[in-house]
Picture (spheres, rainbow, N blue to C red):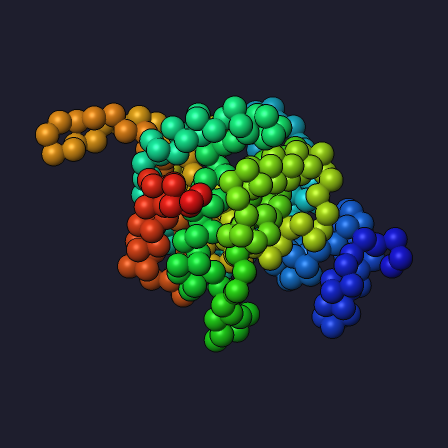
Length: 294
């Protein structure tokens, strides 16, 4: 087990759960093990269970030429997590739009200063700051439900996970104490974490423990989607591409830059009214971003 890269807390947790880290590392196809790998849902889907799903047992080659490409162990673990989360959590998605006009103006005006510091200032940094502040305003969202569903664990810290699309699959490094950091610091961390996730240089202790995660598809496209809650988090924020839309100001239509936001949440803890209030708060911070940076 000396060849396994795992923190002391991970090793202690594995010992308590009776998990053989060497065997787990072999099953996962890697030597780095984090807390998220110790949960039952983090294991790859059982092959026997798949064999019992008769509707999957189709000879596709009977209908035309096919090729087969095995899923990586990383992708198999992710599939197990997503399948369990979607099956076990009653999820609801609340859709809204945030006025990004002021953020875009600030981003453009501060771009030279950011470039002088070697930082790429993106709208995502504002989203992280706004989400962190909103989580402080709504403690129930900054919480986790115990495994037996009887205890709500409220967190006195705000860590934001940032989903990164890599060649190996989705990775979610975490910005720690996002509510205590400035805009440029958050921007720098986003760039650094994303780059190291792509090059597989993220350490195990840089993942897991998020208060809430962000899945940002703004750079790709789309107008809305339904992200899956990543347990033990209670909610996840989806972002798609901002675009100019006509908005009635009482006298005429005017163009407004709006970013579609999608909040999926665990309905066992969060109800629709709370989700609507949370999103109203979040959109308010994004509409008036100076409240975040002053």
